[in-house]
Length: 208
Image (cartoon, rainbow, N blue to C red; front, top):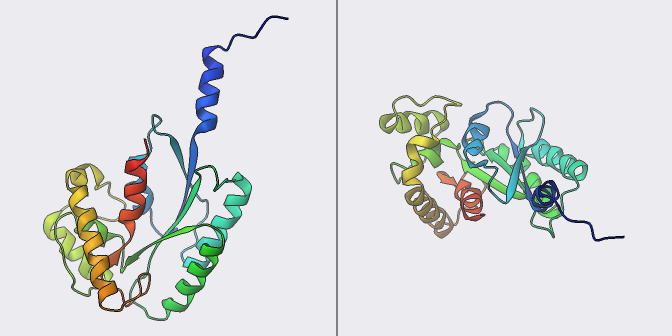
């Protein structure tokens, strides 16, 4: 029997099979995170982005939901698949306990936690301005609107700030060092302001 010739559809299937999975869980109360990260979805990339289903808003429930999805999708963390859980710390110190539990559970299940203190809008603000001022969610958004007048929840801000993304990454790293140097634990309400969003952004940008 002659050797089977591989056709183009076979090659396409192989390419698709080789793509790694990037599974992301975000808070269900708004679509800001999904709107932002949808800009990194590209059929030419070596990964596929998938969002966890559900409307959970507390960190521990998000992690549990993510673990369930990991099992269903059969993610292989030894084969370049990754799972991210993204949430805001807000400003209520009572949230620290549940955040700590969520991080502990995530670490046991190869899940990467991405926090923003107090909210993801700080990441957007860092494209325009570096600050160490402790602020609540409303103050962050108010300050962001000084630079981006039309900002509202769920608006796709990415196309208008992409040129400043390297600067935002640099500022986020500087801010993280500032919080650590002041003995504030990253991922807590006290580490305000701080955002780890740069970590997933760098990962997605650097993957071909």
